[in-house]
Image 1 (tube, one colour):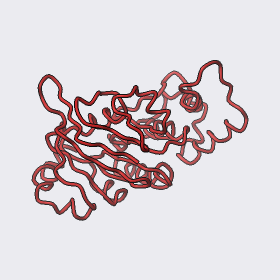
Image 2 (cartoon, helix red, strand yellow; image 1 turned 90 degrees about the vertical axis):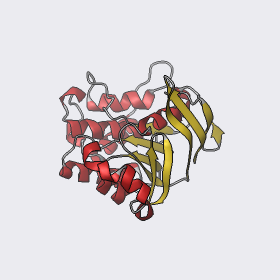
Image 3 (cartoon, one colour; image 1 turned 90 degrees about the horizontal axis):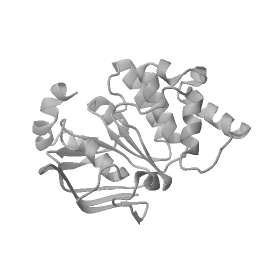
Image 4 (cartoon, one colour; image 1 turned 180 degrees about the horizontal axis):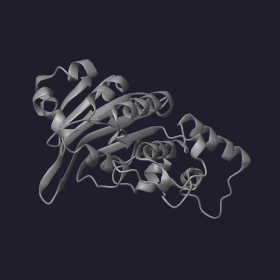
Length: 243
């Protein structure tokens, strides 16, 4: 589904990635972890075309998408969230979904009755069914994160990239988000999840890839990676400071 081969990226002469390799098979839910500044979000930006790769290749669903425009990559079936939710604050919750549904379409689009029912169903699944006509700006942070997640689902993407979906949440809210990802977002889809909360990653992902200083230092089953000495030294020992 996703093949990242020897990708390198730098900013002002400082390497963000150095020959990163990551292969994700269809249906996998892979955790991407590492200390702050290790290059996790930058890697998502390279995959989605927001940040160009200087060297290497990115292939998605059998197609070379290296440095394609973000909108073209999205139309191929890739969606993502951000560390800070990117929602349309002056629109209602339902209007946010309609805008995501019509993204990339030309001309005036009207939401059909069947289309509206589908979006309402998604909102119900994500616990926002009672917030349909609320302005997005009025939502709490956990609700905004849920809205951004459900916005990624309206196009029925093949691959979803989640960048700290539980950031700023309480343990109970984090548990709810993990359950939502497992039962709705990742069901039948391929996902990459960035998260500092190791309990959440462990519950969601059978496999973890670890970045440190822009290099992959471990890639394997969750159990293997969380017992790896290099990982313990580079990341888990600093987890409390990085979370």
